[in-house]
Length: 289
View 1: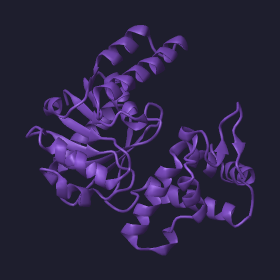
View 2 (view 1 turned 45 degrees about the vertical axis):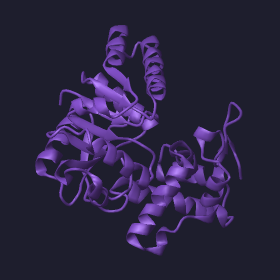
View 3 (view 1 turned 180 degrees about the vertical axis):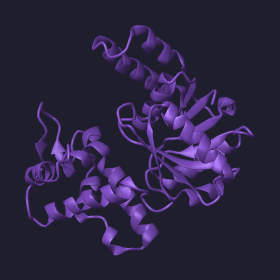
View 4 (view 1 turned 180 degrees about the horizontal axis):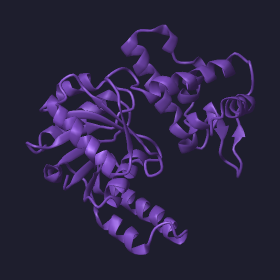
């Protein structure tokens, strides 16, 4: 692939753009305005500068990576891309609007992909120009550090599409797992119900946030407790994923924990809002319960 476009210049989209550019591939980084896309490129540059200071990469490599990222504020330039990756928020109606707009400029040979973490690929393929050239490619946060990519073909996804995106992911230094188009795919089908169950355990008064996190870290040898991880992911994202799994499976065991819903309704979304299951106002996060 000679050029990749990323739609959505938030944390995930910026991370995807960075790793693609670091692999030597030019990237078009798109958002609703060129200012937002430019700000995202500037954040990438600052992050790479810190790596230069730590002698993780050279200054020349950092400069070359940033130079490969072109901010854009509309979809017309995306006609140049061999692959367009949607990395917007985990709301199906937003993603569908993006696919419809991107489909109008998608090159005849190009692939359209979604970085969705849970929404069915086959269902979203209904609004793309060619479902054979549509696939789920789920990166994990933070993208530059996490080695895994889930590939999720829809019912109509062509084998050549799977092969091309797998080749790209491996070129980026990622390990690839192939998932069928089932709710939550592999990782989130296992992970998010666990985070949701932790909220049920907390809400029932079984234990405190600190003790639940400590118990999981030491008892299961996880690097982060469920509440630390949920705050890192974003409680709104966790809630959207568990709702998608519930709606798609119809299985009541995936009903959202009332406490998780309450935190999201309060705007306590985790690290990105400064407060979630922990309060991040001080130097050390403090449990909110």
